[in-house]
Length: 248
Image (tube, rainbow, N blue to C red; front, side, top):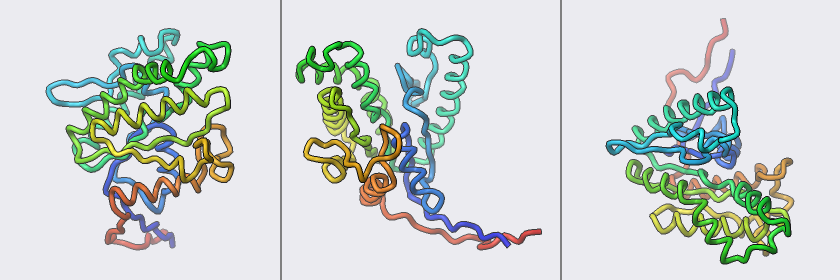
């Protein structure tokens, strides 16, 4: 006899990059979002969405501009990935449930871009310049969330685990603040556990760090999950027609 896992469902959808994927995996299989659209952050580079006749889509129309050095095989993989993501997005839009998103939470991508442009590891740019650069960088992500809000009752944005190297601190924190401010201004609720899980400089404490260099561990994911539950409601179990599967 095989026992079927009795799942509890969150009446919400989740979209985003690896930070959302970490939370999704932490909760599963006992707790699941109704729908999901997730992929590594690189799949949302450039102008990754389009609108038409009131609809919202993940688009590959400008994918060559996003990956100018990629060969034909890589481009084809990225196009296929975006087609898959668009199918998932359409299901989410049709469901009309609250959305938890981490699209644009990959702060490290902005910080590394700044570092590559500054041989002095941050000394070249003032915080004012970093904030201005971050405003430009987040424009596509803010635009996507603004469009998303037209289709779902609410959107909550998850700030990623704050794991900056010393030489990327100012760029990383500037990006996080700009992202939080811009999304709050259009009506998105920001899920921010940095004060709870970080030190006095908001950098993630060791006890919340995953084994890689970018993400939070299960303790961090649980702290995020508790905030999500507060926003969308506690996960609820549903009656199942059959509690057990008979092995034959």
